[in-house]
Image (tube, rainbow, N blue to C red; front, side, top):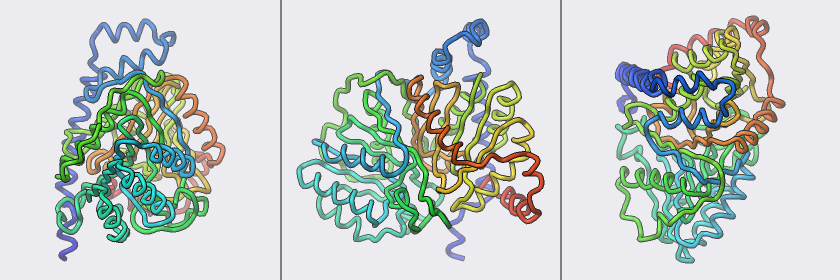
Length: 440
């Protein structure tokens, strides 16, 4: 009974999400449906001829929030080994500070590699500041973090489950590394060996069977927008009442590094609605050619479903790559309960085989890309702290599309006729999970 007392009241949660849904619809109408007559006229006049990048820049500027920042270089990093190699290289060259924020930090081979490197840089006078989620790292021994603290690393536990049980539903699901305020890494990759092997691990976000390891995506960002990601780290530190940070050059002068236009998007339950969700719906609503989405936990609400179906209905090539197995059966079957509607509406669905899919990316019209920590479920939209990047540019989108094509090549297409013949037992699982979709 004491444990149940910490669980969210379902009616309260449902009502809060209904209010958030209304807020999103209102903002969406304002940002997209009621743009100035001049902008609408321009898009109509040039539709089909206008450079898609110009169009997405216009649309992104209508979404109020963090700024679009020019002059960045974004590097696509696929899966754990490539991501960790790039992270370790950046950490080794750190001269001033290292800021780490991660939902999961394991006391395993990868976790110990991280901690050893961080301790090495701390000993060289580089200040290391680390935020970890209390539930995400629930199985990690306290001694793991004590070792870092004793060496001078500033360690902050996000919403401790023991001392703040009323915050149990608000988790820090972000994955962010900022080195010297000049280079940022973000995406879906936690600090864990599951990304480099099929070994099992503890806690949430863990597969029941992942013989091919975990398939995920991160990015490395260099350029002026890194300052925006740094701000998001600092905001979390302050909100969680972390000890004053050591005096370092957290916001150095940043010069252009490339051609990518990037928006840093952070979300928390304190927001009236999820900005990343609004941005994604806006991009889908205005897509003309393609919408390619890969997501690990697909529990769509009516607005997202409508946006996908409307896009497919007007001839847009809408494709979803979703997992064929999951560590969350409830989310897995709740997502599958929508397959028939989506397939009948012309949306193409693929399920990734082999590895456990943990990717959270989207590509629209070959110019608008999104990489981050947010899943397509209510938990990411309203309950978690999340971090994402929207990247506008042809070259990066081409890299994203190449990665997308590889994932499709290792996925199974879900065909409507065969899907209709699935077993009654699977239908029952979907129906049961669908009952709880607002809580997933």
